[in-house]
Length: 490
Image 1 (cartoon, rainbow, N blue to C red):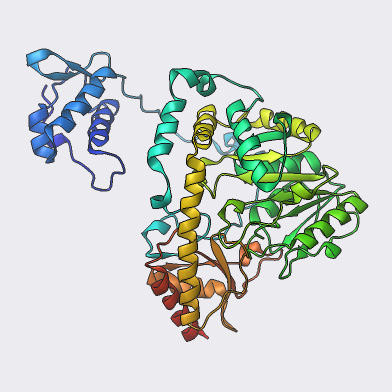
Image 2 (cartoon, rainbow, N blue to C red):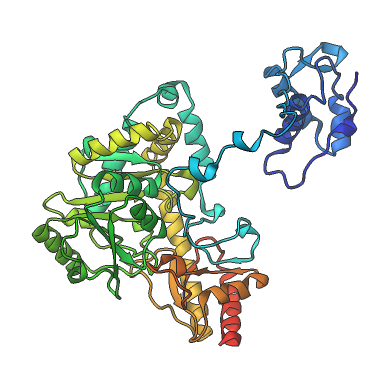
């Protein structure tokens, strides 16, 4: 039977192209059983006229569906749902009656260890719909080199790179990506590492989890910064190690405050999370001297080092390390885009070998296609151009934020000496940052209260002001709204 053109309707909010949307409408109809084998499709001219789109768009969508065996083109007779089209999925049958109480699963007993709810900063899922999203860790899509990333991804799908995409590499990483990390990324931080000293991970958080699992036991003491990265605190708590938090000051973590008998210290010296303060080189050397004297390991999370636009970044702890006791963690989440979920560890070969064995048990290796696409992006120089573009934009946005804060009589509590993408702020006296954030949401302004970063989470006055996801033209108005709302609350 013929399928009327009125069976199709376009969604203005659909994220893809019109051709893709037409294709998905046909596929959905077939897989849902509404369009059956042998049914005649609307003509390309008639469907295009009904949808108000170009006939060539419908023609290309039909051609793609014919190639995929969803449709069958029969010359002048028309286009029909193919006899070889995938069959609709059978609807699962439900039991005629619920099982008796004694047969039901008692999940309160069946579940093993209970995992805490993430203490990450709260942000709505629709944050992009807010006019003034001063949130951290998200990027402005306009700054990303979509064209060259797409080309590198297609190159990774080509015949030459087919094995890198399709084979199960077990514990091995893409050698091209490892080479790029070793020759283009790590040397910028003064770090020399061979292939056996590099492990590719699913982002920095995955790297921190692997390191914690390998290095910590119930009898070992881990130390982190306070305030500090919430996900790291949860990872360390789940490892069941002894955990201490050391308060940071205007120069980061004080070496003399590291407790005796520390086994592993986790630190963010270049851009402290979340205050963004930078640890001076003298303090870095003092911290390494303390680590050598007391024989503890140091895990350096060097996030955002690429985004230094005010001054060159200080040497990485790993570059100053003479004894091989620093485990260096990096990520492409801030320099490329968060959804990529690619990071890396540079450490002594025996540790990397153990991390690789653990990773192989959990996920074998990060997806080969992503690794190869990132490798091409690095090798062809697009990464360097991307970082240059982002630092130029962040410099402009930071200047707009600092100027707007000054105009409103505000100033950052602290910030990185080298750049980055956020400022650390304090609300007026007697104003809790969480209350301020709730008052700002109806005004389409998002800020991030700092409660989740504290070792003992409690409402306080601090919040993080990220400017990476908001255009410079909107920053002054957004900060004006923050200042006016805070003044009314105070």
